[in-house]
Length: 95
Image (cartoon, rainbow, N blue to C red):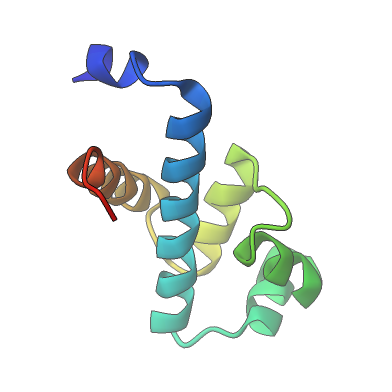
């Protein structure tokens, strides 16, 4: 499966997979009943930082992603695996 994934254009894979990861991250935050303000406090940032990455105006790097996941009590590896599975399931399907 890894070889197949590597055969895809990196920009497409990165964008679609990243967007799904952020969608899942936002949903996990909401499911946990945590506001953007509270999340910002937990990670030492302002609410605008949270808003910008949730809206796609700013990208999270890997360390930031892990920090945000931990702040909302979500395992980053579980979230990434779910995003990857969703991405693979949806690949090739016409919206």
